[in-house]
Image 1 (cartoon, one colour):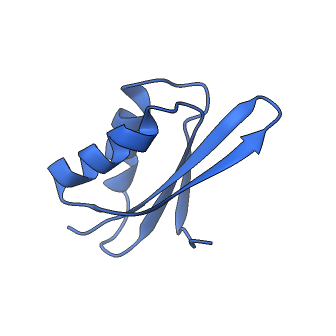
Image 2: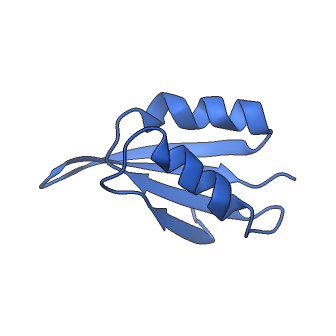
Length: 81
């Protein structure tokens, strides 16, 4: 289980909104902090690693869990700069 410093709820939003919301939120963090992005958009599984590669932040994990409404994805991003 990955410990996050800040949680960002993007449930109900679809590409590209979870990434845009992540970009805004990560600016509020300090270097080394981990942001947990909760999403029900399966696209986050490929979009978040690609965004991290582009921006230089570190993807430290991805968790999937079954919920009543469907799959929930939790992407963990460490601010590196």
